[in-house]
Length: 334
Ligand SMILES: C[S@@+](CC[C@H](N)C(=O)[O-])C[C@H]1O[C@@H](n2cnc3c(N)ncnc32)[C@H](O)[C@@H]1O
Image (cartoon, rainbow, N blue to C red; front, side, top):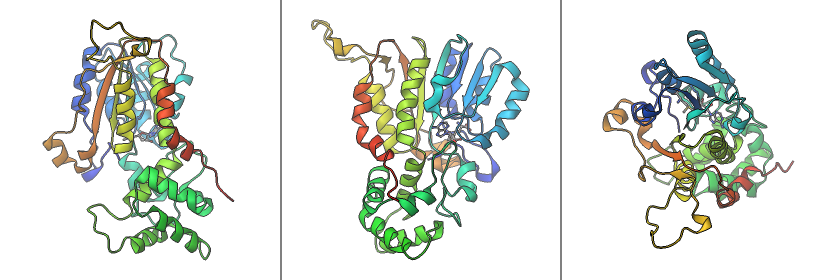
């Protein structure tokens, strides 16, 4: 989902006040905003004259907003058109980072730009590339086998009718090129008698977007990269928008945090060496007022941790979600 909402042409960065209240005790230093978007978070952090921001975004179009901050804040703000899994490629010139922040998903600018094909309301060719991609959803629908389409829809969209939709796509593409309207029609025809509060196409479109942008691998290697970037005492804060993202972040934070229940009579085992301090088990969610003003914020969850150890091994984390990163690595069949 998205944090940047453009209802009434107004930009609402999600959970902004909550984020600022958890990072403000660290003010006076450098912050990394891994998902610049329209710059709502970066701009707010830069309002404090002792802060600097290093921002990245895979979408080069956001430079439209970044250039304003480059102009206004000069050496206090830097922007990189990079994927956040590449965070360790940034030369930090010995800068000690106070916090790394992620506000996951797409922005309203992306979904409202129908040429980019993120929305099921788009017309014409499928696309869904956020930036720095290998292929688009048009190529996926054109070239992926039935079984692989089924896996993408099932694991990234939790779509109950994945099998039938995949089969119908294969059948249709033998006779015509499937564009956005055709895909919506195929899904509607499969789900015509099924009642759901969500639009019929929501799950399949989410699944394709995750696959095209390799969002699971991005998140896993983005979190590990952020950990490697932070000094001890640095904060890692993440806003998620759907259950798959939240499951990954929750596992990373909880599994590698100090176990609060460990007995002081039992000697710490080696595998108990923890990487984070988890201050709050439950995620921070938007207030009623925020949801009322900006309904799409309702699924947002903010989680954060403090790094307490440098010597961490994340093999268990990588393996836990390997079944999903393997699907992101699936190749076209023709
Ligand atoms: C929800 S918006 C961020 C909104 C921002 N917090 C604001 O206040 O304007 C998410 C942004 O993250 C970017 N993004 C998503 N995945 C990314 C990745 N793997 N690497 C870098 N940027 C990414 C998207 O292009 C989009 O601009």
